[in-house]
Length: 323
Image (cartoon, rainbow, N blue to C red; front, side):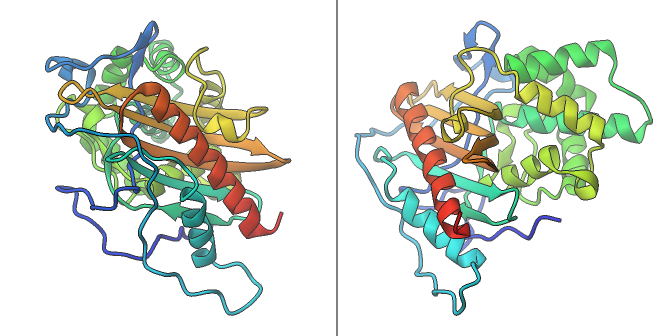
């Protein structure tokens, strides 16, 4: 089994308000249709997307995370704390616009070493689509059946093209937030709450929980609630993302990756949520990486930050494991 994830020291924020750490940002995957990004309006509820009502002026600037000091390990054996410390240091090299937020979680699947930067909860937007499909597959397993042809069609469009209508159909099929919660309890997602009604995009999650979900999707043998067939199906879709949607964590392992991205412009502020989660290969090793962000002035700047964070996270964990 994978070891328990390590978290940075500090008080855990409530879901009602974000922490004040300027450089700790949430991961929010964005929604898109087969034809491109979804521009959210006040009537975007049918697609389950988030409409932000807060507005603030943002200027480009590089910031560093403020965290409590981490005690150095007393032996040569790497510790969870040392991994978190190295990840925190690595994030200091990532340019984050003033007012933007960033949170990262990473795991080396071979060594089992992991690290988490930031523990805030954020709206998922389209990254929840991987969770929706995992929940549907778990329900089908429990019923002793395979997905129907229609369910497979919805699943393919939802993951490969980030199609919102397909996501809404499967969100209803799993029992909306209640169904997601039942599946996530078995998956081990402790800090994820489904959105109200059809608002799947308002689901709240953390980078650490997204890493836990990735473990379920990409685990071997008895380490996952999903059976081999379910894992293979979901991995296959995440490994065949539509052209133009394959940026993000793939920057840390461009020769081999499987991912789900999200990008969402907020109507009230014009600022962008940019998120990416998935598995990458780097230097012959496999890593699970989740990067969440919001408050980006443009989509391009958000993608650049997420990609820089993914590469820095993999490099930091490589240094922590000594490989």
